[in-house]
Image (cartoon, rainbow, N blue to C red; front, side, top):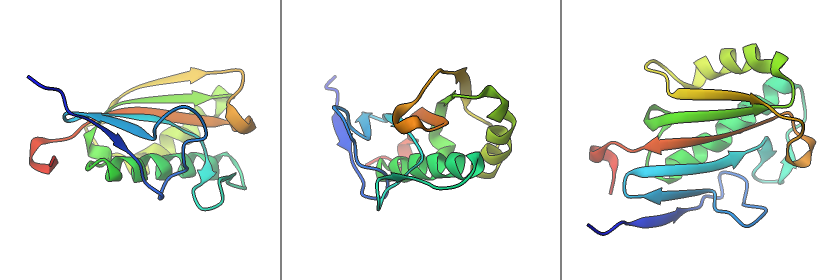
Length: 134
């Protein structure tokens, strides 16, 4: 059985600023790279409080998921990295606006620092349902 590997790229999410792809699709599984709260058009960190940063990260992940042919319903694993775990309840509140049950598996990790000094980063694994895949 031959594996099909596709690089996913969209201008609707921040461009890769290193040696990585926005996402890699292997058959129906998509590995979404970590997203930080960069505004795709400016490549600058979104201005505002942690809520705006969290929303920007979800928006960026959503753009990449859609470019890969899926959506948030298809995410099976979400990893959240926070420089301040006291922000976790805010992540939960905002996540409920983007996801519905059944929720994906998830990890939340407190980290010392993230790229560009941001407070939040997320990555995900998505499995696209057969009827949506091309």
